[in-house]
Length: 98
Image 1 (cartoon, rainbow, N blue to C red):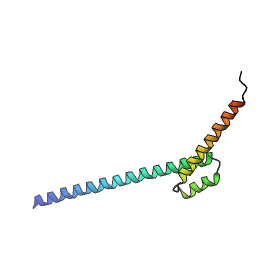
Image 2 (image 1 turned 45 degrees about the vertical axis):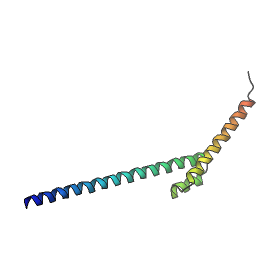
Image 3 (image 1 turned 90 degrees about the horizontal axis):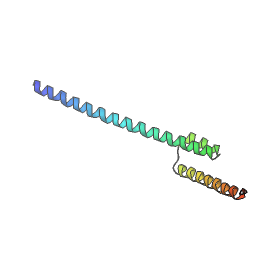
Image 4 (image 1 turned 30 degrees about the vertical axis):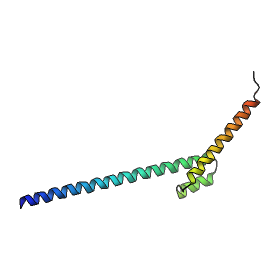
């Protein structure tokens, strides 16, 4: 009988360790996902502010990241970068050569 009691305690201990490890793994994954989402939202908020559209920045901050919004912002940033590059080329063409 003492042997059955020892086996039961060992089984309970192992089950508790497995459940504890699973709980810890779930918590770590959820924390990593939350940090990643927060980082993505902050990055999109900065991109929106750089593009000069404060209304979108407030939308991102209030509503969180909406699907397709990140791609939209990236497209706007690429358009702005292209426009800056075009203006730089035009200015270089206007500069007198020594």
